[in-house]
Length: 304
Image (tube, rainbow, N blue to C red):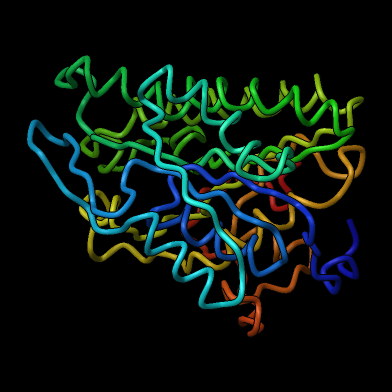
């Protein structure tokens, strides 16, 4: 892709998108940006009208954010969003979600963003099996189930876009190992994300001849959200979510033959490809920002 392609803002009018985990954080931002490009966005998560609690670190924690709030933000900006409450840890609910989204979207689903997440860090020797299983459910089983369900509709339509939200943590740690690799306790999370990266590339190969693009987008470093705030050291320099949302949008409009199978990172991809990054409502152009020096050196700027 040439830098000139970045001058063209993708238009998603008439498209329907499903974004999981969109009651807050990264998922909410992605839903807002897809909406500002013209898509009807179906937002889903467990928190419909009130925040719902969940287990972390052996205790119960309630995080802010609801689907109702996300819909209100999108509608205030002139977009359209449809809330569908669902718990993707429930296999039956997960299997039914795509069909519900297609019905709510008027019989179509063009874009699926597998964003919903769960993180409960602990060293491997100390991690409880429940945390292990939930990590795999969110980052591998649910994307597999939802993508599999979406493929049938996308094949029938002759096009589609699947975007999996990955992580730079999936990349191999540098050696000699820095101290945080020994103590942070995020390696099960990282392993699940690494599997999602590989699944993304495999699905891309399987679906390219059906004009269904499958790509991965991840933060180049870290994005502070209600769900990750206590997992990111307070002195760690984070990045703005708008760059990731713009990178997701960039994965949702070109034919699969032109853009599929990428592992794209939010600060690297727009910089390398000359993509203009806009605010979540699409109204303002944000500063062009070079990837930070502290990002993982194994990241490939163009995602290839």
